Image 1 (cartoon, rainbow, N blue to C red):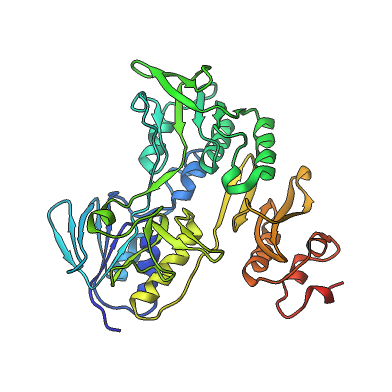
Image 2 (cartoon, rainbow, N blue to C red; image 1 turned 120 degrees about the vertical axis):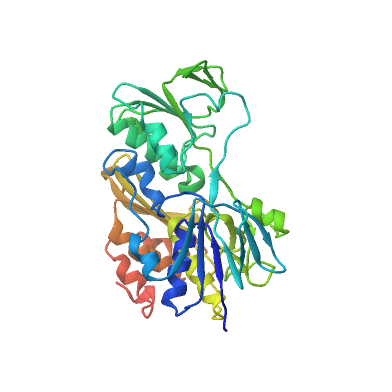
Length: 413
């Protein structure tokens, strides 16, 4: 299928990966990449870890600076797309420029969710999404300073780890009754909480935030239980909202992101979405925004193929990773759900895995400081091989043996 003039709105991992895939698959036409940050596209996953911790001055670029020129990518960084005309596939920018395209990819990502109560604009209260956010959050950090984190999800726990390493006094306020419950389930969430507490982080469960207190600068965070938590800085980490405004204005269907099929196309022919902003079909059923680096890359690859007329059906399995309290956490599938749980190894010894079986299929897994085993866990989830809890939990049989597609589990001894 011949196409010309592809416009990609968003210069995060989904947008850049789509541009890279289009070129690698042979598309030689005009390709425009629009990004609202006026910097070379960078790896956001490093912000809450190496960059915030000072190990890196800047996040690594997604691609070398020269790649865009070498591949004849027209970059419009520091520009924001304000409107899409679905009929003409025309994209209007905030400087009045109009871009006509035969294919459009919306990869606008997501924005941190901010509570509506007063005080969120006080100096010292931050969210974490961009390099500028990191610089503001970090500028007054020094040993002994007090940081309060609103929300005990992945970003909150990562930042808590980083800040504690730098000598800050850290408190995490979590409104539910366990950390990381949505992404890791109660068992791993409880284990992570214990590890955070071991390195000196205070965790307050069943404690939301009612407000932020301070005149010229933050001096305390007020809990929903009335407690006052003294603070020199605070970070709001209560999730993100897909940036769907431009899609809604254009009339595209949105439900937890822009609704797309399993090749990334919206209901409007020639208009696609990928990354955090896309509500993408899941292999296990349903669809939603996944907000992971790896899934964004996979979606971008599928979209690039679809734009070129090579439809690849790519229902997603959530895949992500994190670093919490010195442990590398790797996750595939939705660990919280119905079924039977099987543990391999010993989490108490600092390394192990938790699996969720649905019927006799492995549908989710979490590895703690066990990257080689995680590669095999991914195979188990993706292949759909049938196993009993006894077979999966038998430490005399390796995951590599269980993952062999040509070998039935009953034959493994």
